Image: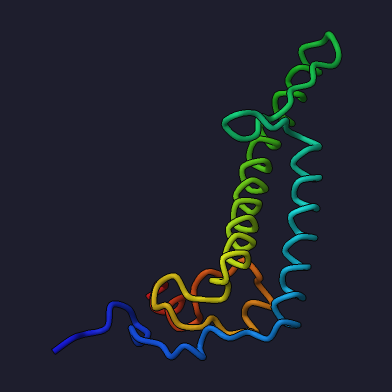
Length: 136
């Protein structure tokens, strides 16, 4: 007997892949706007290089207190940059799925991700059922 590979059924009907063009266009627009915003935010604190972004370090002042404040700011910016870059990668991944016609399909069970979930979290890559099962 064959058991499902995930908490969701392992097979899906082709109709599970269908998302209305207007819904898909709306989500694509959201993703593109989010990408633009993220790129602007990360560009304010980091410079893009061959291996991703590098946080900019600005040295102002000649006192030790000035340098300490700049190091603390840079440490905060490194964490922020990592978070923004992670979000940017998720957006790019979702946009690539739109381009390939695979957007809205759960990476675990291959079933359609709930449209309401995608409207709230356009970068979602798994359905609610698999997400709940993953959390335990």
